[in-house]
Length: 221
Image (spheres, rainbow, N blue to C red):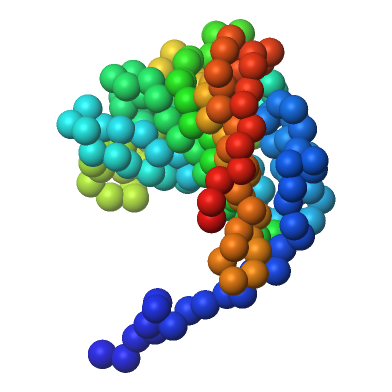
C-alpha cells in the first residue's frame, strides 16, 4: 500500500522570538492579545479549541469545540449537558483546552477546573444562535447516543421546526448550556528554529483566576 509516511513530514519553524518582557502579567490578558492577532491574521475559526476531559473510567478523551467567550475568569463554551463530555465534566469537573494556531506557529494550552454557567448566561447566549442551531439543540437531545440513520436526525429536526414556526421564540432546553474553564495553568508556545521553541507557563499560586497571583516561568522546549 502506497501511503504518506508521517515521519517524512517536517516543517521548519521561524516564528518571532517570545521573551518574558513581551508577556502580560495576567495570562488571560496575554490570551486576549494572541487571540486578537489570530483573528486579525485571518485564521479559520481561531476560536476552535481541542477540549480534553476524563471519562468516568479514567480514559482521557478529546474533541474540538468552539470558544464562545472569555475574560479574566476563564474560557466559556456551550454544549449539551447530557453529552459524553457533559457527563464527563459532571463526574470530573476538570479540563484542558489547546488552541492550535499552526499558521502562526503558536499554541495556547489552558488547564483548570470547570463550572456550569448560570441560567441567565445560558439564556443570553442561546438567543444569539441562528434559528437552525437552536432547533438543533432540541433535535439532538440525546447527543452522543446511537441513532439509526441520518433520516432519523432530519425527522427530529423537522418535528421541532414545526413546533416553532419562523419568527417564534425558541426556548433553551434545560439540558443545554455552558461551562467556564477556570484556568490554573496557561502555557504560551511559539515555534522557533531547530525545535528550540519559546514556551512560557503561568501558574496560579494564590487566589482566584480573575485577580489571583500568577507565577510566570520559561519552560525548556
